[in-house]
Image (tube, rainbow, N blue to C red; front, side, top):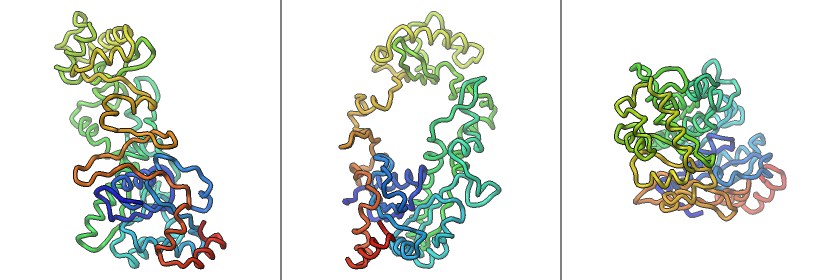
Length: 380
């Protein structure tokens, strides 16, 4: 597999999991790192996620078998980073204690992903994205007034505050290891990562410019000039006309200048009537008609696209921000972009175990060794 991107030369071993660890591994692979995912034997018939699992090589090994664990330990000896998302203590029970690995490979960065962290009263508790963002204050801030909090998919805990922050953490530790010669453990917790994503909101709350009530604030749908509106065809537009100049253009293109006091934009007392005016106006045309009317106008109005529409949008198409693979899956392209070390399109997601033989050969196993390991079910 050819490597491109700024992380070319970095080797990552991903101990198979779900959600945030695969996302961190995908991001690192997109940026050029060589990522080898260690699948469990039970995963060998699993259908890979064509987007989240892209860009890797795959080895199937039984970590509970001492010989299988030895294979993976030898692989980790060649790596810069290992990623795992087990509950605290599981990696140690499998023989992958960070201290032991550091003795074998002093420069190794050991990235650990959990919901609650490696210690603390809830460290051993089960949970999912919704539970972690509930404890960080994120979930309680999202939703409409008088309604329950709205789960924002699993973007904030699993991916933004989880996998993305794990990727950033291990890269920081790799940079340090290259100057110090010593790796370290990176403890990434989704409660803390999702809380970090709320930094600006917590700052506004400290200044008294944000309330704990859902749907009452500038960016949570409380302001009628920062919200979504249904159009005549049942589809929607997104409005983000926060600044006064953008707000004035919004009002002008909507044709409601006679009903809106521009000077009262930030007065919450005017917001209910303003919202009603905007809602009625947007129902006068379809989503795409409004997109056309606002084209070329800096009013911060855009169509709300569905997933099957994004690739064809003129801006996205021009920048090739999305692509469709040979199997028809829509992929967000690798991001960000690098002028000197462009990343290129990632390789397809591997079938679990498709690289087992090749990886074992690279680690020095003979053909006879490999056949023995396969026949005994140590690897697949």
